[in-house]
Image 1: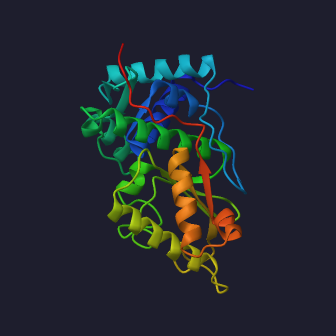
Image 2: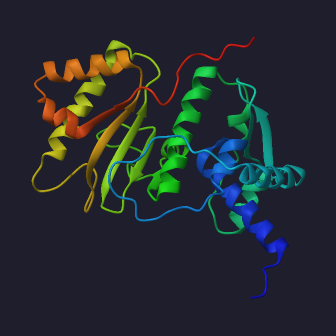
Length: 265
């Protein structure tokens, strides 16, 4: 079998990376490398949350690809608060995607100064979304949700937008919330009310009205501190939730990701 032209392969890799930057907003080198892996399909059941780990070969190939794109001024380069190099789509990169029929906008505002808390929040959400893509879920990233490019549109699901949405081949929808710190009283009350609405919708024998035809609830997954998990579980039980309903609809991950502020030596 005749081998494919290396230049064609390189262009395909470039366009795939540009499309990923359009979907995610910004990515670190390690994220770009992780996305090079073969994506599965047909995911079902509860998603894994472990951050993806790229091979050394994929890291090298990703570095070459972003270097070519940077030389062509199709990506912008910045530095995260932790010192990591991040990349976003430039105007030229967005135009390249548009010429290929892919709607895209520049991510130049995303590589400017932002807080360490915001950076950590976005990188955690991105890692979860990347893991979902690799495992075969249909994914709405934090960037896509912020741009209303997801099943909840402008209004959200019962008025709320998650940080990541994962949809399995079985029609189950998993919403991921990255909660770095305690919410203020008003926001927390809104969260409790929203979870009540989700529980009522999930229990509707005629099917979900909030998610749409053919879709059903998986779980709302909170990436959070142990203190947040304890408080939310306690308050839902106090509101009348049965523990079986809580376990069926809400999940917590408190160990995989750290929320400490970045401190420079």
